[in-house]
Length: 467
Image 1 (cartoon, rainbow, N blue to C red):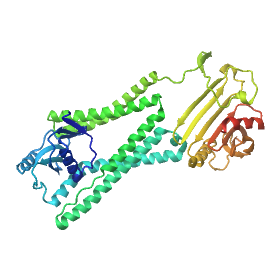
Image 2 (image 1 turned 135 degrees about the horizontal axis):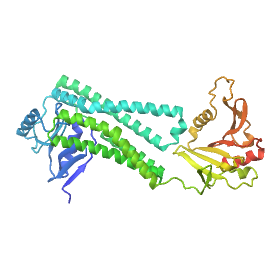
Image 3 (image 1 turned 90 degrees about the horizontal axis):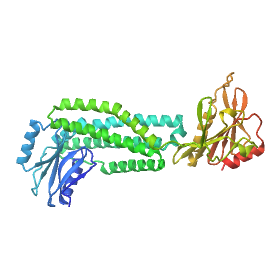
Image 4 (image 1 turned 90 degrees about the vertical axis):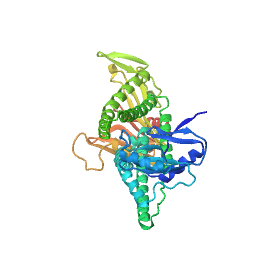
């Protein structure tokens, strides 16, 4: 039977009521708190019994203090003489327990108690969430800017969606904590001044648990979407590096506390160490890990290679949905066929296909096309507008007189079997580059030959790619 356990407890810093109820329930189940830290709350086994707990806030304490101050020690002695023994402490939070049936509360003045909680919250809890809220707002603004400037790039990437979702969740958490605390503080201060009563705290533990679960589920989905690719290992490596760096910083601070270094020196060294590791060591580790993983999981292996002008070129034999051979007769058999997924998410998938002759046979035609599959119908129009903007950069401006002006011209979509069809006009001349809109996909295709496509060839494109 285990005699100790460690729990990762989610409580709002000021939620005295919730913490006390939680610890009393643990004692009734046979567990007594003996330590709190960044690595969780540590309990040891006791005989199950009813024990009262009291959470008191000491604003002058710091997480960097090597040992309790004289004022804290005097306060601990006072509490012990009244039957309250110190169970654990963590910076401003002091947790006492009392085994008497009806002990006298430590705090008897509601005004002083609310003031102590507020002073402690301003020193740690609130400042952390204010900072998180500011970063969350900046990240949310960046996400939406990227979304409106490149919606497909964002929506087609599970990594971008995961990052955006996590920052939105963190922003929501910080806002709920900040608003919740100030709402409680306003009510508690008024009640204490009015009749001396203390308004019970009400944290957001369930909300915190929901946020954490959503983030874990999002991360699990991200890993599943990567399958067995090197991105899975890179994601795990990134998390491991972040956790490792955090552990190094926390352990170093704890070591300095054991060495009895002053709180000011401990704080300054910790800040410098955090900056150095975060912006230097972490980057070096990630680059090293990614380079190692690349060697373990190589990119696609070519089917063949050849030499031309002193350089080695790769040849691929991927199965393409549409090839030059489907459109015209040719006896050239040294093409390189390659298709690759540019990005893929629950909403959008983008693939790019190329059929290229060898460098010593550039007179042979080549074929390039991309397939954007829209899995969420409500995003179709958004994706179409983005692809049209990318296809030709006129943006509705007047046509200038130069050779590089691009414009998309709507053409008859019937021969293509499409809903809509557009052709690129460059410098006043129609190009053999088309954007074809089908029910659930949009094709951008370019033909490297001068003659006009026949209706039969257009029909083949529709049959091979439009479905």
